[in-house]
Length: 324
Image (cartoon, rainbow, N blue to C red; front, side, top):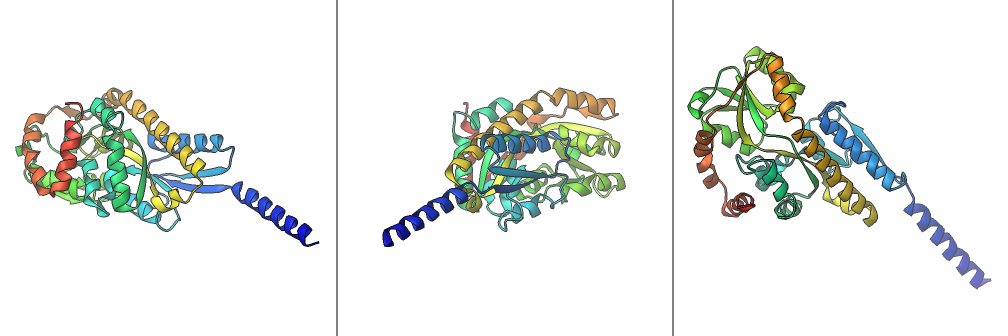
């Protein structure tokens, strides 16, 4: 009888383990992008691919248009489990560690080809992500090129000198503030959802974002100029709490890593194939496109490097040296 009881207990334990292994894993994602935007579609592709590869074991839900909070709020929510992953720029993590601000460092990534090298065979991008995970507790997956951030402006700007006194909206991040202060503008930190109205009312004179966001937010209705500064080439990523991610089964982690990278690679190609169309659409909507003296902008921003500690300067050099 004792042997039968032991066998029964072992059988129940094995069955319970198997049942637990098949429990549905539910993950909530968040983006500030609206449902029809490319970055919302990235989340949809990610969710669909993960659910398919796990035979529905992982159930992923996407929230759009900032309905769960702005970028900073949803990233903070990752630590409390009310959100499981966020689609956002790497530089949003600079409140946790200054290294993340290099995601918005001016002229650090030269163009799309340089971006692909950094996050491809060069390996620097993944090493950067690994170091950020150690410093911030956030796990980053994939890199989706957004296209260069450009100015929307109330007045024409061709050189840094034209920025004097211009009230420039920036994300509430140190690197963006330093960039526009160094250029001679007056940076005004402000949530993205307030920018359009602030441009209309004259609270600010300019804002900067990739052309896709200029169109999405209809800046062209509020100010007449788009200045192609190309001052930073930002990228989106999937951000997880490292504790949450590492607590998932290893096979699920593998799927999330692979499908997250694939979804962001898809987004990169979508953006690259659309940039010329974005410019044309802006012009059709009345925007005046200005090609400024970008070399003058680069030269004006060179002293920024000295504002960073030595270890971050080394990272800046590592990024800049890729492909040279």
